[in-house]
Image 1 (cartoon, helix red, strand yellow):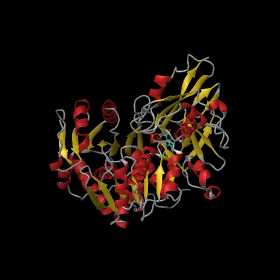
Image 2 (cartoon, helix red, strand yellow; image 1 turned 45 degrees about the horizontal axis):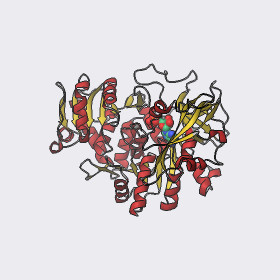
Image 3 (tube, protein in one colour; image 1 turned 45 degrees about the vertical axis):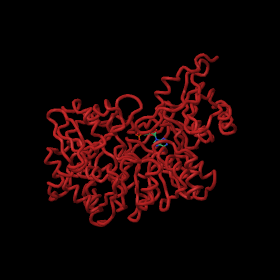
Image 4 (cartoon, rainbow, N blue to C red; image 1 turned 135 degrees about the horizontal axis):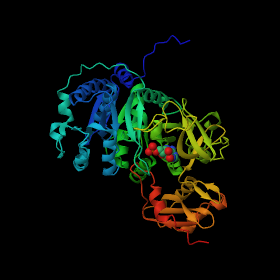
Length: 546
Ligand code: AMP
């Protein structure tokens, strides 16, 4: 027997119409490329998104067409976020930090018909235009007529200024209701190996994810929150914040392209931001700026960090020096992206000092609606004892089932689980902790060593700015850990003293065989350590050893 409740689909446009109706004066503030501050409200976003649908129609965009964006976090980008899926098209956010060859590949693979781009990407568009001309028919620069940069396109491609198109468009569009499983957005994984792969979200997955991340034990968003996503809107939907902010009526502060410590501190204080989300590198930059300038954060009470492991120093320094709680989450493009969040249960609520920091290094509990497990090499479930570590698998309504262009279900195992590629422990209270990427774990004499654990200890050394541990081939043990460290500015690193830092913290056989001091480490376009490059360079470093 079916229930007798109203069917009504989970539409992305319903998040925006809710915000416009019930939080009409809720603020959306953007730092623009001109470094001026642009202010409008949720009511403005909703009205302008309807206008933008008329622009998309004018450009020939129809249902299921892909609308590409190459843009920082700003109000025009937000309008594309809502207009494209709202009319049944797909908002395809592209990471501009990727190599131009990858960007051209992604645009063609996605089949983008229109590209919306910030003015700072004019040289990039000019460079790749001949390679994307088959599919892209129009490029819209996110500026007014006066701000139009030099752009050279290929024959057959039209160039427009966003504001001119908007000024000429009506706002008489009415948001349609259609199947909630319709595709809404597309985002390619940055991929440290191989070609990027597209993850295709739906209205249903996006709305459910927005509800889940707004919960008190996740982002804890409310109408009085003022949230600043530093995480880019071109990388996994800015962790879903543009949707969850509308759902809750929270004020949204969009930082544009300047994400250095000084710019962040200024914007956080000027816009009375209460909560902000981003990757550890951004927070380390902010911390450095606060320490050297003596500035304080006046309104921020919580900082969420994710995307890579949270360094203990970050949690400690913000808590002890600035009274700000650093919260740790984990996710991936394939999960929309948030999968786990570290909020205490009663047993952890009283933790203090070093115990609290140790606990916050865990990536946290699975969001309600998702399920997780860890398995060994034979796919047998491992115990949740906080010790056993194995491949982390997840499933649920905002986890991908296949990559764009592939057969539905092809990214899952026979039981419908998605293998994350991360290696983790889960403790008896359900807190998951990543110990590695499965391809980064060090397999020494048949036992596994966590590279992340070793890196965390190395970066707690006062002379070390950054550390990477890789599996180097070894004639006797198969693989052994090799530690590479970058010294902090003005410091020199003594390898023996770094090795001493491990004493009492790890099993003796986990100790890196060697420490190499290097001027810098390679990173991916999303700021993660590029271990493939390190492995290809140092893979045989121990092969002379006995
Ligand atoms: P992406 O799809 O580019 O967001 O990358 C997802 C991957 O980033 C995950 O599979 C993890 O390996 C890594 N990652 C994300 N969040 C964390 C975290 N809090 N700690 C450690 N690794 C993380």
